[in-house]
Amino acid sequence: MRCLTLSEELRSIGVKVEFITRNHMGNISEYIKNKGFKVHLLVNSYSNQQQSLIGYEKWLSVKQNIDADETIKIVKDKEVDWLIVDHYAIDDHWEEKLRPYTRKIMVIDDLANRKHDCDLLLDQNYIHDKGRYNHLITDDTVKLLGLKYVLLRKEFTKNKISFIQRNKIERIFVFFGGADLGNLTTVAIKSIIKLKLKFKLNKLLVDVVVGSANPYQLELKKEIEKHSSIKLHIQVDNISELMSKADLALGAGGIATWERMVLGVPSIVVTIAENQVISIKELDEDGYINWLGNADQVEEQTIDTALHKAINNSNQLQEQSRKCQALFDGKGAEIVSNLLINGVELDTLSIRKATSLDILLYWHWVNDPVVRKNSFNENTKEWKKHQEWFNNSLNSPDTILLLIESSFGPIGQVRFDQTGSYYAIDYSLAKQFRGFGLAKVVLSMAIEYLSQKGSTLTLTGEVKKSNIPSIKVFEQLGFTTSPSSKRTGIKYYQLQLS
Figure 1 (cartoon, helix red, strand yellow):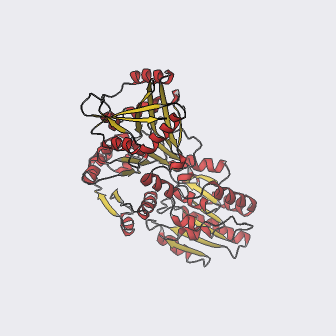
Figure 2 (figure 1 turned 120 degrees about the vertical axis):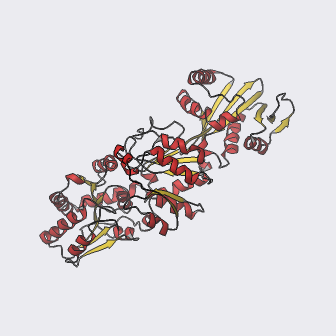
Figure 3 (figure 1 turned 135 degrees about the vertical axis):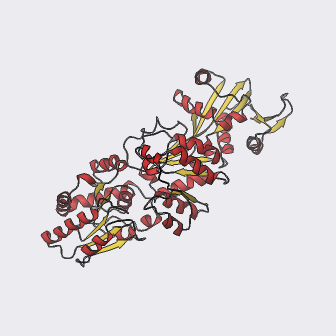
């Protein structure tokens, strides 16, 4: 569903999006198709091999190398700009195999339990530990961490209303996910009915939402038909509208948590999956929600107690509502889409001198395959030699190492090596920021930085004739060619600053 949300946002700005999913029982492939997207459905073939699958591999139903090969067959003849990966059984081995078939890779994760080979990583959860991916991805990977980047459908920002006073509970919203295999919905309904009787809440209305994959639909329908104040909604498209009317919600962790929060609806939450626990626990500790524990720990009495507490603490509900709405605006899908397609906003760029803390970042950049291909020495740089070079460059009065950064992290580097009044240029962009026309901007920022020296300077640049993008950048910035280079296949550029 979060991929579908991002896809709809991307499509709204003119991007073509296709899905690759596996034909698991209870999948929503037809739902995705009905939203207007092409779906490539991988075969769900049960075999003896599945007996050897462990953990999240069982969700994939095959070994990830097999899944990678099957995916390659689909994408190999396509021009893929971004491959967006969202699966707990997939790691850097799968991503490395797909590298040759896509320009860039984005990973959506929230477990932080395996390595990734990606250009951009999104974890949209509420997590205090912002460094938990540091040992799982390279330094040049863009990290989008936190609720600012939550992928919510536009309807949630559309139905977001200003803070309202909740002096009493008159409407409750219940939704424990599309499937709700633990049948928490029925447990919640029984507790709400008892609450109505005990507190004589005759005007209390209840909206109950379930997905089409919920196996308890008939049982729920029979129970709900006994109560005129309770309404059952199956696989609805107006869930944000129902949520926004509620004074209190009961539901599962996951994406529905962020939906409730952005609408300012106080929530009683039950975690139904491992990946939900850390963020939901921290939200509870920080006073945003009321967490009851994992599904296997929650009984009818647990919900009874939580509902009684909510009824008797309207001030706490008001504070939760206010805090939730102030925490994030729900425009994450728009922010992520703009980054994928348009790159960074130029007014967010800044420039600074490199420090010793940037050594690993520079090493990843210098060994990027495109950088090596366009270098005069195409051999991979060994770590020890890179350390020696970087430290010498930092301490040399004749070398200036400049780093250009954005609100999403570092995007490129420019180096000036001085010989008298001549300054030789070397520059590169992080691979995830290529294709947005940023090279010209990065180099011009560095030149402006250098020009502050105030004396007459001559900038020089040597570029392989095969490196057409860099040739265009130098020419657009006013550099002129010079025949002084004696090496074949090289263009020599020069620009005088006064």
